[in-house]
Structures are given as C-alpha cells and as structure tokens.
Length: 299
Ligand SMILES: [Zn+2]
Ligand SMILES: [Zn+2]
Image (cartoon, rainbow, N blue to C red; front, side, top):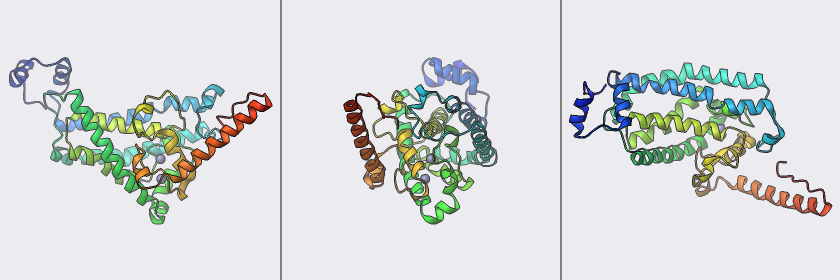
C-alpha cells in the first residue's frame, strides 16, 4: 500500500517525475496491501515450477538425436508417468509446505525491512543485492547440504531429493518437507542482510528457482547464458552429485563452484572429468586412425 493517493502526490513527494516503471508500479500496487504483494510469490513459484520445466519435459519425451547429445546421462529415460508423478509430488509439497510457509513468513519480511514503496530500486541496486543473495545462499546451502549428507541427515531427510539419480527439471524442488523448510533459511538470509524492494525479493525468489530448475535439467547446453557467469556450477556440475548419490562427497554447492573448490569437495568430480577427457581424446585419436570419424563425445 503506497502512502500516496495520486501520481501527482507521489511525484511531489519524490521531487521528480516518476519513471515509466514507477508509474506502472504505482498503478498496480497503490491500493494493494503489502501482505497481498508479498503473497504474489506463491503464484510466481507455482507458475515457475509448472511452466519453466515444460520445454525440458518435451525434450525428454521426444529424445531426438540432435538434442540427446546434450543429455548428461543419455542412457536414462524417464517416462511421462514418472515426470507427471514428480510434478504432482512437488505440487503437493507446494500446497502443504511452501505455500503455508510463505503465508506465515510475512512478519519476518516486514521485520527485515523489505519495502514496497517508491522510488523503485535502480538496476544496479537490484543487481548487487541479487548478487549478495546468491552468494549468501550458496555458502549457507553448501554447509546445510553437506550436513544432510551425514548418515542421519541423508537417511531421514535428504534421501528423498536423491531419488532422481538423473535429475529432471521438475525434480529441482523434489525433497522431504523438512528439507524444503530448512533450505528456506539460506533463501531468507540474503534479503535479511541486504533488504531491498519487494520487486527485488520477487526477482530473487524467481531467479533462484529458475537456477535450480536449470541445474536439475539433466541437459548441458553449450549456449546457455549461465555459462558466462564466473564460478557458476550449472547442470553438469550438480548432475554429478545426483549421479553419485548418497555416497556423494562432491559438489555440494547449489549455485557456484568455489565452495567445493575451497573445502576440497570437488575432487571426485574433477578426477572424473579429467578421466573422461582423457578417454575422449583416446577415442578420437583411435577413431581418426581407423578412419571412421566417429565422435564419441556424447558417450
Ligand atoms: Zn545431496
Ligand atoms: Zn539436487
């Protein structure tokens, strides 16, 4: 709810004309309560988890040769019923855990000072706040995830998320309800440390979930823009963690790679990558010598 009745009042208070984005925000939010604006997150989450993985589902159903070469574990095929079950399970967790958690966490959002008024944050302000949120989330998530791989944490809670040894987009939030609750803490810490505008908060929740869907997509596309983000883990990086499963002591970080590097928990992954690289080189040399020109890249 904005403390201005009209656009003119808002411009008078700011001492300048509103930008186009601020006018849109004024028209949309002026008569809506802060609580209602905050609850938009539930709708965004529902839409993101229903729509963003859809192209991946289509690829999984079609499994054409041209796309299959980007599949990280090409031998694994998940039938449509399996994907539908995953989606239904995730939606059940949404309705029973994520939604209610969002509804009751509003006082904490208010307490840390997430604002809904004018002026809107600049692009740079949003960028640096989102960067802080991602770094804080990544670091905290790393340690929680590592803890969840101790025997008790894995058997009681984290095992559910690892049911997918070859993850799919829908499986990003597929986890025990307790894990969904616990991992809400890293998502909240960043905004608590650098509180911003509600729009930044929406963007944070949306981007974090889209990132999680990408890292669980099961496909490693060379053209994905996230390849240009320094120290970004991506699908192949997290896929290895799922591939190894419960015994995994590698690749715990959710977003970046440096925590695993600093704390020495990427050794298995790096060894495997190096080993496969050498194997590919040998194959390609043998292939050329035999004159068959076969590229074994995707094997
Ligand atoms: Zn794990
Ligand atoms: Zn995962």
